[in-house]
Structure formats: structure tokens, C-alpha cells
Image (tube, rainbow, N blue to C red; front, side, top):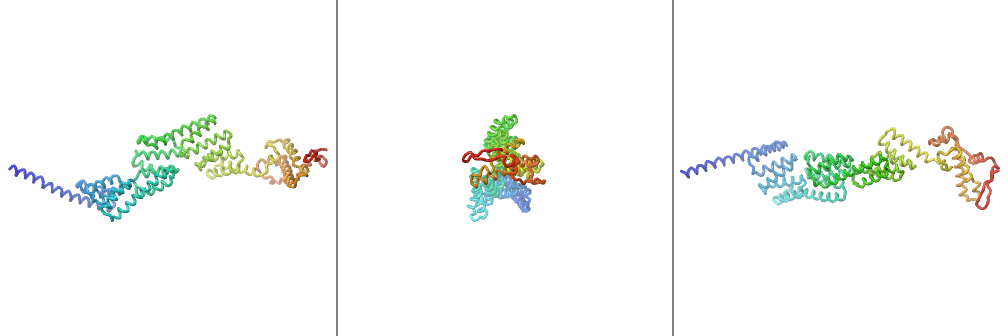
Length: 493
């Protein structure tokens, strides 16, 4: 009786269990077929739900995990898909599609080496599998792009790195590492909006991603928003205390901010020598920070202009616009230095650049002033011809004329070569022309203002000999006589 009862117990327990297992398999297959239908309609969320139900009913079926992995891949959830693909091949190592999907997930996430291993296993199982062959090539291509990018980053060839990462991301669209490297290089190239966009996309998915926080801060740092940049660097270091790049950038940002502020303070206090030293020290902190360094060069140029080191000021402003060719303040500062050093063509060029960018009345007037000075500089400098200052008095102008006219009078050089006589005659005429203009208040005013002297009926025809005679008196009023070879003295009647 006891044996019969034991057998019955056994029979009663086993038969329903077999029936439940078969029923579960049938139900799981139904869920799978429903999942397939939704997958075909590209309703991947519903497909995912039904494949999950199939797995719940029959958790040891490799194909169910493979199907759900494929669905998760279509949803862009590659990390979850990788887990399902790996489970599928653990359950059935001969499941070719499982290995393909595992490899595809690895590749999409940027692990090309692991992807190669998965595709190699698929080829071992089916050496003619075209998809496995192509994906294996893709994975090797990604590894090659990684290798080239690493070398080019060390060479600071950031454009090449961006190119390599763009190619790699075609096969690894979910790889944050590739995206971060691309964003960092975009920042180094000054393409800040693009870099910020990449970093922000990653932070939307993972707000604790230290690399993305670092790149976001880097963009702000290079855009001269140093205080905000420091906040992102600090946040990145909270997430990853050993983040070397964030640590260096944070230190540089704080040092730059402090040196620049100290320099500004010294400048405002009139301590130009100290301001120069501080700006110079700041320029040595980080050569990659283009915008901040452009401002530092311009600030140092302003200091040099205050110290009347105008050539140095021009050089600093030139360095500023080399770093940032849109930096209006640097162009204005350099243009003023060009004006102060009478380099009017260069000043006009800078003011034209400024006015093309910002068409304000002030900039228009600055341009007109520079053009006027350029025009004036191209005329004969009558003050220079007479050897007097622009503020010379009437008596000083007369005295200067007397000296220069006698110096260059043709009779004094009658014994010289034909070439010298011609040159002295020319100078004698210019001296007379200069005196004609500068001794006439009306003509002098027009000349000083840069206006054309032949306008308003002003007769510019003159005879230098007549001016000379009128100044020194008629014939017999003086004579040139030799006191020895090559020497002359003047004898007045």
C-alpha cells in the first residue's frame, strides 16, 4: 500500500508538470509569433513586450532572446540588446544569428575587438555567411580608425580625428567614447556649437557622464566663459575624481581667471608695468585658449600703447586678430597705433574691416579721418620741406624759407654737376611752393585740413624766382660769390 501510494504520488505529481511545460511552450510560441507580427509592422515596443512574455513563459529558448535583442537594437537600446544576445549564445553556442547580434551590439557600442570575436565565431559556424564577412570587415575598419585617431590626436591634427570618428560612428552609432573624442576635437578646432551639441546629447541620456561634462566645460572655457566652465569641470571631477583632463582644465581656468583679473586691476590703477607682467604670465598658461588669449594680447597691446611702445602694441594686436579675426576691439586698438605712427594705409585697412563688420557712425568717422590722413600723407609735406613744425608761427616759416631758399638756390650750385644742379633746382622750387602755401592763411588752412588746393579758384601757378626776389628784394639786392673752391658766401647790397 505504501509503495502504491508512493507511486501514485509520483504519477500524480509528474503528469501535470509535463502538461504545464508543453502548454507553456505553446503559449510562448504564440507570444513569439505575435512579437514577429509587430516587429514586421515596425512596432518595436509591442514586439518587445511579446518577446518578453515569450521569454517569461520559456526562459531557456535562445531564439526568443535573439528576437528581443533584434528588437532592442531597432530601438537603439544596444546595451540591453547585448545582454539578450549574449544570453542567446550562452543557451545555444551554435546560434549564428545570436553571435551576429552580439557582434553588432559590441560594434555599435564601440567595442570593435569584441565584435570581431563574435563575427569570427559566426564564420566558424557558417564560413559563407555574407553578413558575418561584411560585419567582420566593418569591425576591423573601426579598429583602424581608432588607431589613426589616437595617433592624430597626439599630433594635434584634430580635423583628421573628427574625420576618423565620423567614419567610425557610421558603424558604432551608440559609442559615447567616439562621440566624446569627436566633441573634444571640435572644441579644439573652435567649432563650439557642434561640440556642445554632441556633449549635451550624451548628458541627456547620462547626466553623470564625466567625459561629456568635461567637454561641455571645455567649450565654455574656450569661449571665455571661464566661471561657468569651472562649474562643469568641478562637476566632472565629482563624477570621476581621477579625470586628468578635467583636473588640468580646471586648474588652468582658475589660473587664467585670476591672472586676467589681477592684470585688469593693475591697469585700472595705472600700474602699467605690473599689468604687462600679469598679462604676459596669463598668456603662458594655456596656448590652446584662443579667445581668452586674444583678449589678453589686446589688453597687453593697450598697456604698450599707454607706455608709448607703439610697435609692441601693434604686434600684440596683430597676435590678437590672428587668434580671433572677428575681434573688433583689437582692430580698433591697432588702427589707433597705426595712426599714431603715421602708418595711414594700415590704419585705413583696419578701420575698413571694422566698418564692414559694424556700420556705426563712430566707425564711419574713424575711417574718414584715417582716409583723410592717408590722403594728406601722399601730398608733399610742406612743413618737412621747410623743416618746421606743423604749429610753426609766421616768423618761423619766413625764417625757414630764407634759410632753405638760399641753401638750394641754383646760382649757389652753378659749378656742380648737371645732376646735382637739377636736384637743387627741384628743391628750390619745392621750397618756394611750400612758402607760397604756408605763408597764405587761407591756403594753409585748406592744406592743413586735407582739402585740394586747386579748388575754389586758388591759383597754384607760381615762379620760385619771383618769390625769392620778392622776399630778398630786387636785382642787386644780393649776390653769390665764391670765397674758395666749393665755398660761397652771400653779399647783400
